Length: 141
Picture 1 (cartoon, rainbow, N blue to C red):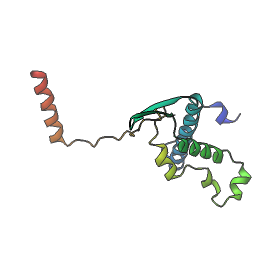
Picture 2: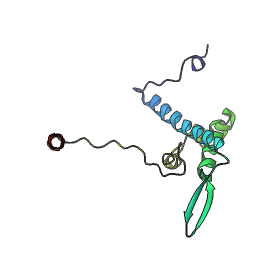
Picture 3: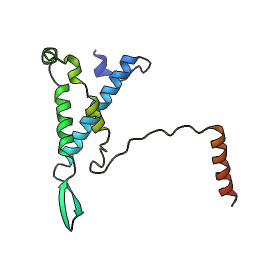
């Protein structure tokens, strides 16, 4: 029995190679999700108002959809095609430039700008005390 068909996909995140595989799978999954969303909304448009007129434009950016499609096509290349290519297995990876674009696309609302989550810096003990005092002051009022 092939374990990839029987067990859900899993990664050992203590192994650098497995972390790399996880990241690549995650990026590829985003491409698939974008294409699925595009196909489900292919005929939908959004209204853009400006300069005294209203225009209907597609929900998805064509360049992003074409890029996601190219990434998926590369991923599906046969082993002979991958070996024959100068880039080898790197050919099937999502490049840093491609990911820079993909990370800014919200799958649910593709026409809206998306700001990736960034973890806030930890507060120092003094800053945390000050913040707690402000909260307590508001509660007391």
